[in-house]
Length: 126
Figure 1 (cartoon, rainbow, N blue to C red):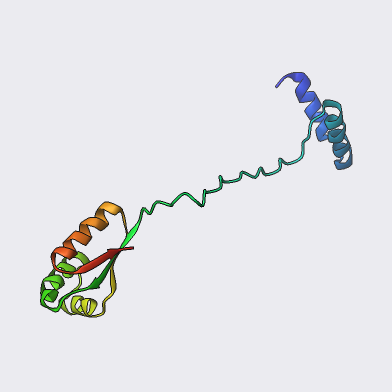
Figure 2 (cartoon, helix red, strand yellow):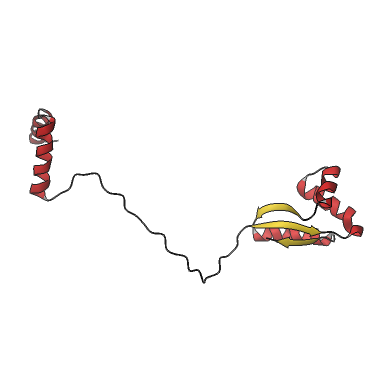
């Protein structure tokens, strides 16, 4: 800072609160500026077109049903996919419909669906 600026700063430090407030108002009026805290700016999100379909990016794999003759093969697949024990996998398959996995991307959900269908299950993606 220059010597002149430092002298002005020292003079301002010596002012009372009322004198400082009056000085700020005078500076604002003289130089046509506003020293108040800036207002928050509201930014509107672009409105979604309700006619445009939304693209689903996450899928849940839902095991709907299993034929009785395919149950054992499906138990093996469910145990591999979920890491469940034999009893837990049996309970899982006995209480259909059940969600096998949630929030998968489309490729992973399709792969899982194909594995389950290869074992004879009826599967949907939600």
